[in-house]
Image 1 (cartoon, rainbow, N blue to C red):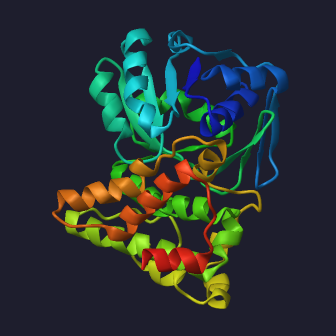
Image 2: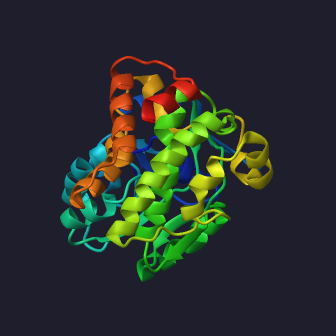
Length: 328
């Protein structure tokens, strides 16, 4: 049995696709989500036209719901990782496989430090999932699930393949995590724009904001000796230059970047809309921490952290030119 621990957007979508294709899955999360899924069930869609449903959703609201699982997918927000590790340590059997499917670069390490009798595997979800309400979760962008290579995953590979979410295994997951984080530097920009992803990325001013945040991060990664993996057709070190292109050239040369579902938005936008604390400390804040460890600064990413903190207190939308001036 598989348990999804922290059944929000990513957890409900990944676990839902597994459940819809015949894999026993128990969801563990908040009472609000339990009530929603009890009323509506799960409805999973994606940009390719997938349309899957799960009528009866096994949902628990306490950590004991994961106790009998052979595989636990941790999908809590990064700020809740430490408490999730403490809770799981109390209920999981030795040898249980635990996969971190979370943003940022340190969650797997944090889980591993507490779950010493379990097998902890670091993973990453490269695609966007929009929670549309009433049990509907929509994958708006492409990508497979990325994980650190581990023999303990072998019994589950077929289930993920059957669900249409194959596990791409990597000998070293850290470069993949940093590459995803580089793309996730757009999360605060998208959230501040208050636009769907495609509309935001279609505007050069917003792309120049992202280019500035990425270029700053790439310089720090170079100094730290970390080379991010190539997730796109364009190498990550060249991507800021592509983002700065005029709109007509960007549409021509990077059409795949804009080939996202019109519904796609970021989880940070969802958090701001719902009045929740965001994961900004584990995205742009991670860049700021990397800079500090090198005795350097990251003013663009630091300012994005400040703007999101302000938006958590009082929501506002930024035009591309205004945001670019703020970051320049």
